[in-house]
Length: 491
Ligand code: ADP
Picture 1 (cartoon, rainbow, N blue to C red):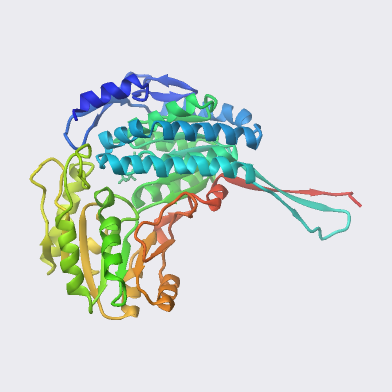
Picture 2: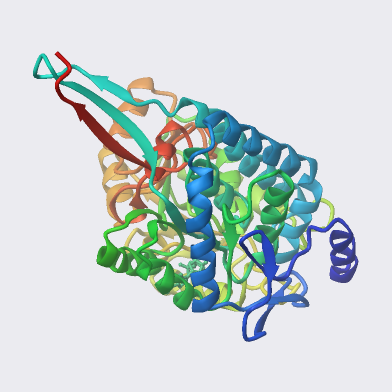
């Protein structure tokens, strides 16, 4: 399908927006600047969007700050019902939202619609949780005192999101923020702004008042700096690279903001000799090659025990060879393009490093014949944990497979990284599954399961993979302050 045809159809539904969204209005950059957004599967320019900076961010923050007074004072039931309406609209428009995701991000349409269902789930979940933000009454140390705990919204939130899940990483932040009574300024990735803008349009249609949700994009460091400098912004939530996350965390110190960070991972996928090979095989393909390997919880390193190593490599390679690469709008395609040229170059250099240090390419190993940013799904055997490919986040369709002998060795290799987001292990030994889960220094562990995420499960990492949790009842804490009220003279 042509980019133009898709855009024309999306325009007629009102879901194709190109301006920033401030105080409930669509706004051009004040100096009229725009940036082009490309379709990674064709290289075509989809359209240009407003390229905003400090002044627009300042106005978005002011809108959010003004709206906070009203929004935070609505009853939880009222906020909940508006979130519910928003959820219904997101689901109603899942096809169009999915098309937008495929258009600007490249993932196959089926996977994109899957992202919409998954992402909308956060709005539904937090519409429900909005009504369950309870405080506490604490037994008093003195007879004439009473102690109460109130949970109150932190205030204006700055949310900075990446391109790999242009929809779900916004709803996962905005859902709990709005449920708690916070208001938000979102800065989506400049590579994938259209989905964010469509999400804002549907928020407006669902009765979420102007100023409660704002979207600005353009000069990322400038917008980021302004969000961080502002005393009105009380919380920064970020998903993206470790390098940018560290910068944001350091800058947040100036105004002592609450910070949650979901940074990169280096997920080990450990298969023990006693695993069900069929189960492990299916899960490994899904966990490694989902979104062409461009997710922070994607398997980065497969660790396979020596007894089944060769058998696994053969079966895995056969499965990977059959993955269909192409434009995400084409039927049967499971592997879209990588997001841009820089992403392909990174993958190429990691593969080169692995080969130069003795690893072998079993399948793939080069750019795909389709050209542009398509890369062949790749299996690399004889990988070692010292190779760059096992130390850095690959973010591409390349699976290095490392051989190990003992359980202790597997744990040691798995934990030998600064990251600690997701890990997976496959075994039919129940004691081992518990023992290894406990020993893994990761925020999320899949046992005989390669896809972990859902709105009810806490998502987040340890070590340099981040701070805080998203999704689940724990995700609310990131947007709440605890206030204790001590009442005297109550005897
Ligand atoms: P990725 O490699 O996933 O693109 P980045 O950390 O570069 O990760 O980007 C994630 C988000 O952070 C994007 O919205 C991007 O525009 C934004 N970003 C990048 N650099 C900065 C910065 N210096 N300040 C604030 N936001 C930034």
